[in-house]
Length: 125
Image: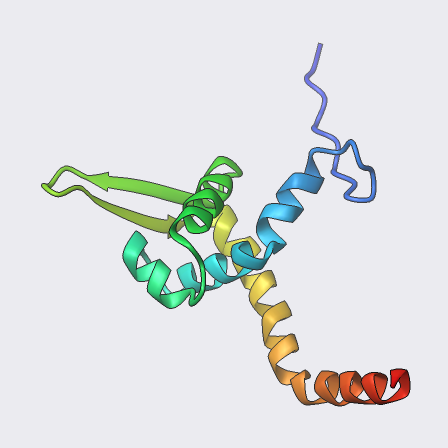
């Protein structure tokens, strides 16, 4: 009997395993980590500096989630003290390119968003 192909995900279904993957890739820190790693391999401390404002705990948790999802590869170098490098996998690069488009759109449209927020705030007063 032939194996059946995996079913595509449905992020609108709360029970679909695609939903946590979406959360990891599009979380506040996931988006920024994926974007930073598009620039190439980074050590933990380099990522922490580049992703301004992320705590060590949140960066570690984000990297673990992205690694589990197959988007990030972690390499421990056998030196003292140990060095750990992080890089995107092929899957991670595919995801990161799409995420980059989203944050580039946010950056490009920021003046419009700020104007809309200001108009909204004025109406609410």
